[in-house]
Amino acid sequence: FTTQVLAMVAATPKAAVVAKGGPLVVRVVAQPASAGQPVVLQVKAPDGTWVNLRKGRGKTDARGVVRITAKAPAAKGTYTLRAVALQRGPILTGASAEFSVRVK
Image (tube, rainbow, N blue to C red):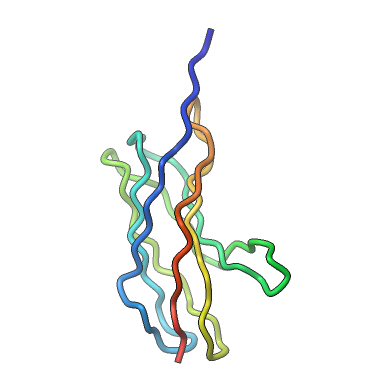
């Protein structure tokens, strides 16, 4: 039989406040470490659904770490985000805790 494990994901934004339309940098760690595991950044929409950030994706290195640089939203406000490590082989999809970034 095949053993599958859930990815444990932690995400930390480089800055809690970013300029509208500017770079939004997030460091993501997905464990267990697996080089090449796809990771996407998602923003919570007003209706409560999660939407992938455009260009907010990357792949982990051998340590399970990826630094993702996405474009911050064009409108001012506080946004709730999360990082999602997608399934790769026996490692199942996992999401980080929600975090907030203020766009000014």
